[in-house]
Length: 380
Image (cartoon, rainbow, N blue to C red):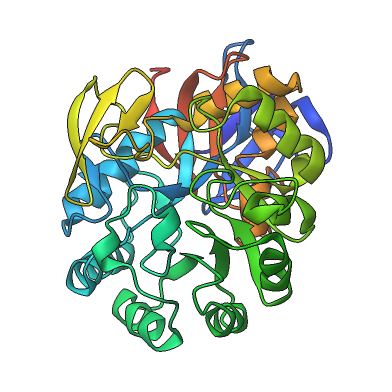
């Protein structure tokens, strides 16, 4: 892929403008017009590639399945929704099963596969969570936060764990401090933490909240809870599943108004049923029934989602009444900043990776490019 000629491009600091874009060695080399660049239809827009830092699976595959083909399948499938990089997310399971998943993701990363979205690293969701807010995580495998146990998982992963979801109140202070020292994102989630505990956690390295509102102590007028603490902590980025099932439009508006759009990170929390019809699927060895936009366990608990990232951006744009560029920021530059990779990803700027998604104004995806490689294309 060499680039685009005289296209509508969302360039960092300029908004959507008419420009050419040249790609060299997987990076954005210039905005000058040269020969052999692709010409797009007038209605198409080149935007930064979407980043999903919380996704379990898609298209019959899950990050917990210890098979390289499953990670490859997820990577290729989510390219269809404009995702250029992501973090396969594990879940609370036995140490043996988590080890198998981490080793598999490590091997996939080492193979440097270019056929789909780029794997940034692993998001370890559990087992360091609260039984009270376990959500769809199997309770029998939950353990308190432990630096020693995390170090085991990190060694198995080949140092590829980039985010850890944890319940801070479950002995989390030491683990958060350790994660901070290693440059790993500590994300408070599946937690019964009070508002004061969240504010303490923010001082000890927590910079993210896992699927805000869901599986955490709710806001109450006598105890602001985890939700209230996340709203008050200016340094915490709030993940949001904008499928309009996990969080209502009104609750989305409240969160965005208090946190500000620069601290909202769209995630899909997608499971293996994403990109598939209604039916019965699996999540962590548990049966999940998918109907419409909802995926639930037998007891009715929401179990991840079937949300596609381009739809999440469309939903947030419509709910908040914001322009396309602001909505796209929530799935590009915001997660890049949270993951501390905004110097190479998250926006279209000179020297950054050529991670690009070609869409129309309705967020339909026509082409996805990761580090200059076309990983999805419906234009020709």
